[in-house]
Length: 315
Image 1 (tube, rainbow, N blue to C red):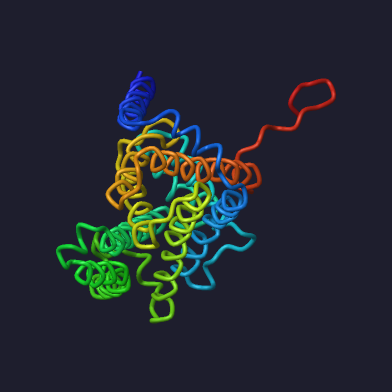
Image 2 (cartoon, one colour):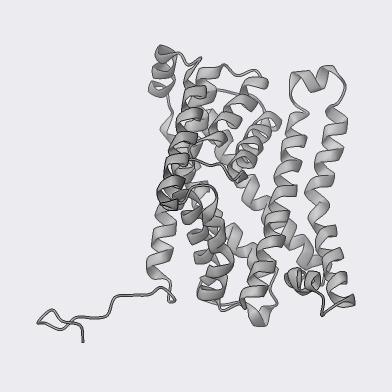
């Protein structure tokens, strides 16, 4: 019953957001935009989307000491599977697979895997918020009020903040190793050196910078130019909305509304903004599902059916 209720609510979220997207949509203009799509930038966007699990896996590797890192691409496969379940399961239930998969596929203790989940998601939140603020400085309303410089400083501070968060969490872990909070930030104790902490920030920027690149390529594919700052703001707005626990079916919902609205604020007409929002979602979702299914199928820790004898009965 609960599963059915979640599905109904997810469909309702998607329906409401689809209505918001369609209210001011010009059908003829949308057809013209889709007919003029350039295949080369669209293909490049798909190529960039393929790298997303690698960036996420590299970030996990940066948070683990060399002796604890599983080989064979296990962390990349875990990242791909988490993306798969994040798209397939509504209301961000797929996020719950993160610590479980690190435990099951990569052999990390469940508590430590949960701690890494908290740290990684906090780094994501700070970085995406930083990109949103940084990119919002390019909006005409911000420039007119002289707030572009403030947005740049605040955005850069948010993007750099994970370095401080990891350092503070590691020190707390050292001072109170038996406390509950210390156990919650267990993963931070491994990123001891400035190089390790910068690697976490760099790979996090690799993840969300790739999302900005996908958005820029999608805009290029439909012949719309708004500048890198506005593109980053739109990408960040969409990803922050996707992080909300109200996502719809296959991730269709608030993400596309926020993405298109951010482009409209930057001066893009609503119809091409919606087309780009849906195009970005299609590229990321299709790639995530394909790579996630491949990772799930090839993961050594995945339960597999027992082999059958020629007669058809289990051996």
